[in-house]
Amino acid sequence: MPRFEYAPAPESRSVVTIEPSYGLYVDGEFTRPRSLFDTVNPADESVLAQVSQAGPKDVDRAVAAARRAFEGPWGRLSGAERGKYLFRIARILQERAREFAVLETLDNGKPIKETRDVDVPIAAAHFFYHAGWADKLEYASLGEPGAGPVRPHGVVAQVIPWNFPLLMLAWKVAPALATGNTVVLKPAETTPLSALLFAQVCEQAELPAGVVNILTGDGRVGQALVEHPDVDKIAFTGSTEVGRSIARSIAGSRKKATLELGGKAANIVFDDAPVDQAVEAIVSGIFFNQGQVCCAGSRLLVQENVHDEVVARLKRRLGTLRVGDPMDKNTDLGAINSKAQLERITGLVEAGVAEGAERWSPECTLPGKGYWFPPTVLTGVAQTHRVATEEIFGPVLSVLTFRTPAEAVAKANNTAYGLSAGVWTEKGSRILWMADRLRAGVVWANTFNRFDPTSPFGGYKESGYGREGGRHGLEAYVTTAAAPTGALSTTGATR
Image 1 (cartoon, rainbow, N blue to C red):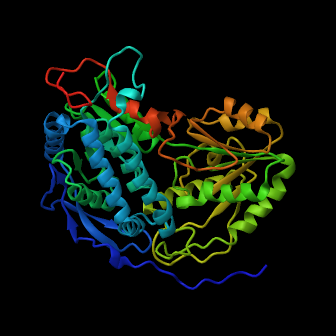
Image 2: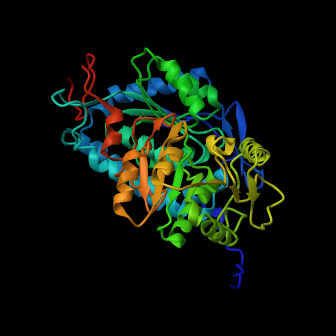
Image 3: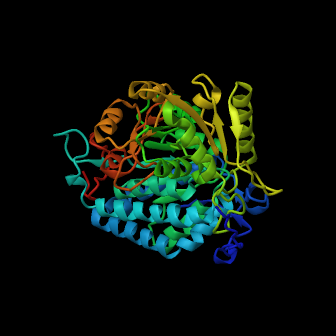
């Protein structure tokens, strides 16, 4: 079969303006930039901008601003009025979609076709979806039956990761605002620019001052937010190690938390599965966003009698992937987000080979600058290998085999994580049987990594607790506990 040659098709950087430096966004305005650090383009290691490192006093100011907004103008709004702001934000995200897509690709390293076709559209969809809930919370069956009307927690601290900066922002900010909370958001240190552009969206939407505050910086900022005495709820997406630290920090306090943590998802292929369709989903399940996805299908479990066929077709398909400039619309795999993440991926793959796994990558020329790792398949993997148990968070697929459905379930569940799984078979009864036994928050049937704002997402075990998205995701942002004097309900009435 002839190989198609593609001419470069780069997206223009001119559609987005990147300032030389950025301050923090607190109480409806940007502060003067200070204590600056660089944010770089992982594809070529060039400095994109300098961003402010928030300190303890900045955290105090942001939380105080969020509290004033909650007890003031935002708390007095009806659900219908809050919904109008969310609709407005969603429309602005759509109107500025190309701008956000380019900025996300430059700061994160993922291909422009992913930010353009996935990240930005779904982010806007989350604001549209939650705007519709804002005036219907009393009909959402939230809280315990008979517990009375729900109300917002108050000030919510949200800490998001670097793999989906804008999308994770939308996952968290949209339900928080829809339910009447105010927000202090901390983006990841390596990908702060889309959150700072979102601050401009808040200004454009004329969101009341203090409703959304954005603090950039390293992990010390997130820790200060988690420990702040005037924060009512924590929403965190990131590593299991940090999630454990947050859980320990708030134990015994009045603070609530939702934690969406790591994963080591099993993508299970039976011998009656449509192989070509499954291979496409295997590729997107682990190589989308360079495998830097918490629910990536990083463990491929293939029924033993079709193992060779599936692996052969998978390798043939990987030979067609294009690795290179993320701004090129033809690129399938972009850059790893940071040098530290690249070193982790490299170390784990080397450990897998040392333990007996066989490594294979298609022929591809990696750029000379930036952080790059080729799409990689590891076969001959055993259950005890580190590459089968630890989250690699990179474009690396570990292949294992099974003989019976029971063995597939046992191997899939043999992990500390429980975020997602996939099942490939033409038998509906087998899909239901497997889904009932897999300890995963999301089980996809004959597909993988499909998301919708109406569907809840979250995990079990060391993948965290709580759900985001859908009606279930609203529950994390409301309470039926007795409100303190002067607190406001979700409809804006004083209780």
